[in-house]
Image (cartoon, rainbow, N blue to C red; front, side, top):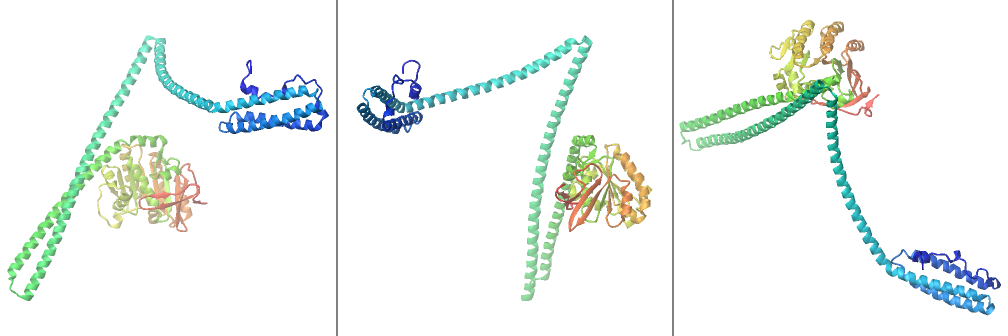
Length: 570
């Protein structure tokens, strides 16, 4: 173990790799095969012990068992060695002396290895514990180093941002330095102007946000107060109703007792009974007058709430400019149904005339109502040309899609061109309606629409038009006259960049008539019923995700559209 050799290196040495002092002597084992066989067995056991020794160094829990087994093997091998030595000396004493010395060296070698193993087993626990302590210390150092590096990275990032700002400022300074004095002054003035505009815009936005917050708080307080008042009035009305019911029961009971008194005694005077009944009747009438007064008060509060709601709608429309700008930039009008907009890749292009063709009661009118309602929510005006419904009917129908529809009417965003009411003998006058004597008065319809469109174009980028329905025009005249009227009519709507929907009933007209009308349109949305299920398909109009029939479900409030790829009929 002298020099640079270590204990484990010495234990792992292979004696066969080193030449011995008796390597050139005659081998006596060739004289005795049985002795040679035992020596080979002995060498094999030594090799096995060497392997066990190497494997035993890393197993902490098995060191003591390995030491005991090695001691037993050493004792056995010592005994075998003695027998072999005696036998070798007896058979060839001169030639085996050197062999005996070699075996003795090996025996000493085994004893030293055994002691080394014992020492290794005793110290292994200490070594493992020391290793674990060192490992924990290294991990703590690594974590501390990692945290230090993270802090350093954050510091460097902050310095980098600072440097970038400084570099930008220096670049600006260099640019200014390279410029002539007039150019530098002009650039500085532009920068100052830009900063002032940004600062002004930020201040305006902050002021707008503060004003909107104050307005919202004020509206919430007002609404809360009105709700409390209405709740109190409702409770009071309930108490009044209960009082009236009690009074009615009391009057009924008085009548019953009077009848019983008349039948039994006849002693009560009829005048007193009448007086009592009159008092009760007067009290009931007073209660009724009080209830009517309360109802009038509630109706006035409802009207006041409606006015305030209309004011809120006006305020909301002021903030719809961004959505209108997006529509104008894309040159496509949203339909009010997100699924239909996805199918149309964003909506219906400006200037489009779309024919909505389908049987009655399948939801095509609901699609048109959603289209008009979507525009009104953004402040886009709407023109209704009706040939089969009164404005009042359309108003009630639109309330199902847009509950605040009447408020948008009050803002002047809706106009009706009614060619139906007067022909039906209805003399009602609506302030938002232009009345046409009959559906065949095409020139009057054209003039009325042009007048309304001119007024709307002065205030809005474009308008939306719904024509319900072309079937009435064809029924009152003929397809040729309708075609002659619609050709310039659709052309003028395209000129105004208006988006127009025209409904027509399926089954009332031949295929040739539909094709003729379709030739002046930009596309068609075709509805159909198949096995009690409803489908629609887009033809023309714009690029779409699917030209197949798509299944949908319709209510009076809207359409629920299915898949574009899986749930369709080819």
